[in-house]
Length: 216
Image (cartoon, rainbow, N blue to C red):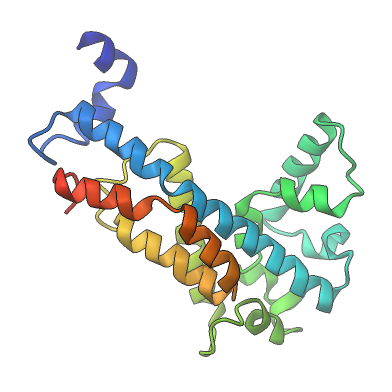
């Protein structure tokens, strides 16, 4: 047991005390299973979001919008710098738009909805927001869109940094899974959503957790 607690850390395992009659190691292992079940939905979400944004931005701002400094502002300066550095390190072409889009972090795409872009994009082209989220027929509010996308971004970071999903009362797994799916629906990616459902293992893992009393 000393090896396990030393290498996983007492602090990490302490999060799971009291969740169930099973020991903390079992909870930790299930947390890994549950996190893994999010990989498909998060991957689909990220790819759909960035490609939908690029499609609509290209229509209204020009196909070369990603190369224009006026659209690389605020937090996204660092995101673009990191992407270009990685492209250079992997000897890809920084003039290839597809390389840049695939290298940019999820944060870049989410930060496009920050107030910093109001004068640059959203006030000049108010129709863009509705065209990106054309699966949502209700009135869209930029601040609400950013908040929703940023919650998903932070949850993604929690998953990829081995955070505990079982003890997150603010954003429980089922709620987050629904949020990801609903956002993909709002992006109007119905055909891709059907493909996602065919490979998504979340419900299976979630029900397992309920049976073992790892989830409320």
